[in-house]
Image (cartoon, rainbow, N blue to C red):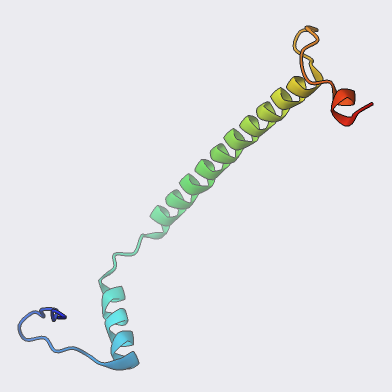
Length: 91
């Protein structure tokens, strides 16, 4: 059995698409929009944060790539470790 939603006293539901648009407009009027200086500051913060995260991901990616190459080609301090590629390919 479905339970009906309770409305506040004195309110009536608006119907259809037009009602949806009116309610959306009413809700958007309640929004406190940022001032231009706040918007600029928030934009700068987002750009700087994005750049820092991109730099971090780049460093981690390059490090893992180098470690993988050293593992495969055995380049750790001349210890001769690693995987021999000719053995893998049967040469």
